[in-house]
Length: 179
Image 1 (tube, one colour):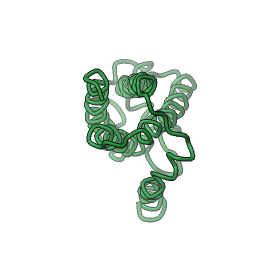
Image 2 (tube, rainbow, N blue to C red):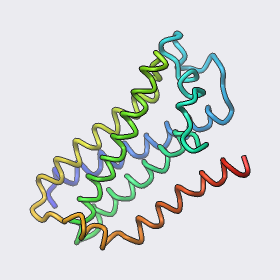
Image 3 (tube, one colour):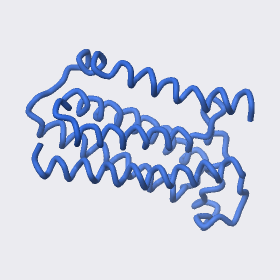
């Protein structure tokens, strides 16, 4: 792996850490249900609290921001694994697909903001992180000489996929039964 590829991965790791922090803040705000006067409530059309308390701020009864926390944790772990494993072609392929999942959520959230006619500045920063991460992942994938097929990737990562699916079930169960 050359220094440019390592730089891409370190940027993705940095974005993951900041993304986790911002997503945790949005999760806390959602749970506490700040109604107004949050630092990013600038006007009715630029408001974190309006977006973060809307019906679009939950998926399966779980704050979308909490799924963002889990997404950024997995992104950071994937990037670290690529940095420190010799055989990482399947991880680079997984990184592309993982960012694809992130982009789908970003599109959903942007559509929600259009429907609400309100922009959430923190959400927009997070959306930008996902787009940058996708772009860096594509550059990394294109510059890597060995490509892994989707079948090989699933074969290599099946236990990680199962673990992450279970981790996503925990908040769904928690928020739908206990909370």
